[in-house]
Picture 1 (cartoon, rainbow, N blue to C red):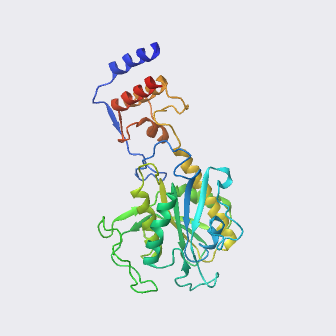
Picture 2 (tube, rainbow, N blue to C red; picture 1 turned 60 degrees about the vertical axis):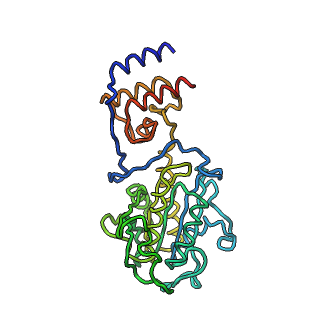
Picture 3 (cartoon, rainbow, N blue to C red; picture 1 turned 135 degrees about the vertical axis):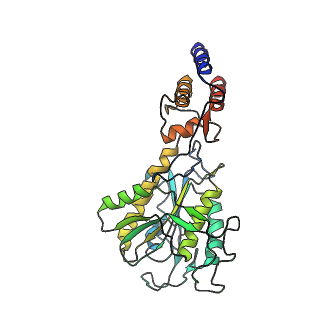
Length: 338
């Protein structure tokens, strides 16, 4: 207590009520994105583990995530995603089926998330609202090659390429009535890390990011927009979705190779998500909230030290994206209550 009193006298002698640091944490690609995340508890929802959702469309994207399906008819070998690789996350997948699993002109398909605007939207929201994922990757088939193309942009389009069944276009169109036509949402997957991970596997794939283009104006982009739309609607609250994005998968990629690349992509995503596990107020990340955390925050406000991304989140106790004396007051209350 004596140490706390001495520290408080020093802190308040140094700080003005107007001292503050504004911050906007950049994502892994140095593109400014706000990822509002507090201490991520193991129980993100009613499940024991946080959920990562994967979706697919045309082969190989349905086949490569089949082992993560909980549907016994789609995955008779059994769900492999529970506490996957003992990482503390449940990996769950949804995808349509096709009469010919090796199809080139695959059509709409049948089952969940058919290649159809209405069916995709009608299936998407119940699936995502039920599982409340902490992260999501939507996959679809891209060029007929060996590419692993991470899409950065998705747009709230007014005009789309027709699908297979009337009314052929999304209803409504644009699908997101809360935003203007061509409103842009972006992937915040760990893009560079995924590219490096796939490249380092040396399995013949060509991983890259499409930073300035778009996912094509078809049902793939419709799904890409939905994934990032869900994330943006749920980046705060008890069941946060921290990251989402779309990957176009080359149509000539062998299924077994695609499965390997999918698993490595998910591993890389989990490594990224693990950065966001922290205790609000634990500025020095020693899993104890005490006067040492006060000193770290004070020195940051005074410009005497820098904080890592995770320290920044832990220090912004009132989650207003400003670290100032208000956070110090809240931290003092936490210490005194403890």
